[in-house]
Length: 228
Image (cartoon, rainbow, N blue to C red; front, top):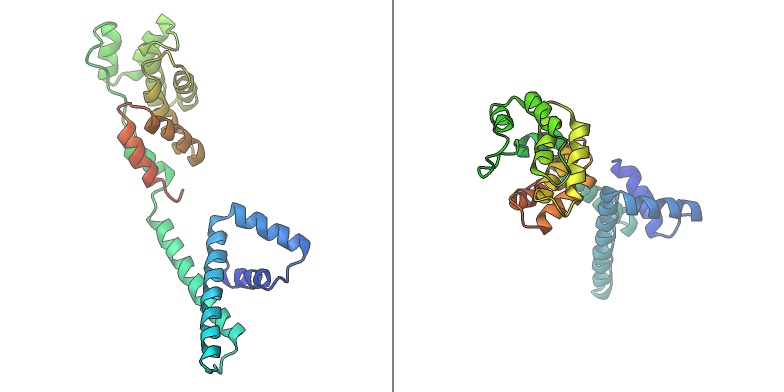
């Protein structure tokens, strides 16, 4: 962000000095750039405050040796530089997508009430995910079955992230699967790892709106993602 050049641009907008093309570019940037939008709002607020001070001084018969336009520009520069510092501070204090993924990801636990497929269970709990994956694929599990969910987990653990995402996405869209909400959580995490916070938020919100075991974690992660 170049605060000084932005001030010149915002000053022209405030004084209605932008041509049609410049105004269209200005509005588009205002809608798409949250930092620039904050700059504009800060400048407008400062302008309104200083205008109020000037009006009060005029009513009281007071005068200032500093031209109003210059005074406003100096105050705006200071305010926007402070805003830039705050934004940079927040950015450096913000965890990256990868760091958040590492902080929140945990392998899905094997359910205590599943007594079938004991060989797969033993392999999974032992961390032998490739062998467990091979055994599950031999069964050709359907989307709504628990085995399909754990197939996705095995793929994720052995580094087949795209395959894991595809499997979890199928489950996340299946109303028949008991693991729908769990799958939505893992799809959200994978999107986060891929530095796609918009899609991550979409799936995390689905988890929050449901009633699964990852609901609280999804709420906390969304808060931690603020600024991404």
